[in-house]
Image 1 (spheres, rainbow, N blue to C red):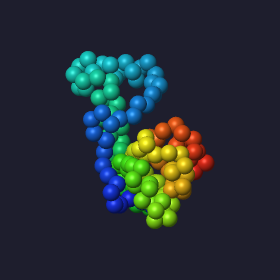
Image 2: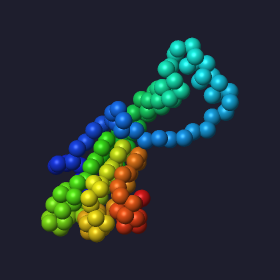
Image 3: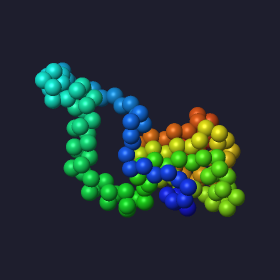
Image 4: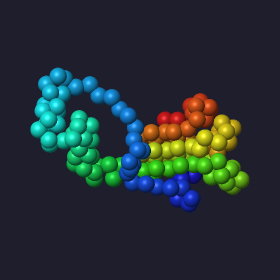
Length: 143
């Protein structure tokens, strides 16, 4: 069963402190140009310029992203699974396919056994937050 409804919270875009850190390598000329634009007041800092550039590129490709999200039946945004959500799936004899573009998270009080009993597959384009034990238990089901 592909989930994406019910008591699960969906949020189209991360807000505030809900961010993931990435690292990029740039050549000295590109980095110097970024620093120049920051010094000249076009951007408040390097991160501001990089985020703006990424958002502009995502806007250029928005149609392709939306079509792919629909075709692949991905949940767009945030999908959180509480222990109660997984216990309800277990009681209903349902196996969950977690397919998310954004952030998928499993509550810290979910045991590896409960995760194995209720989660058939995990596909996350973005970030997957779960305890180390649950991630290890689901390792063979994460694509």
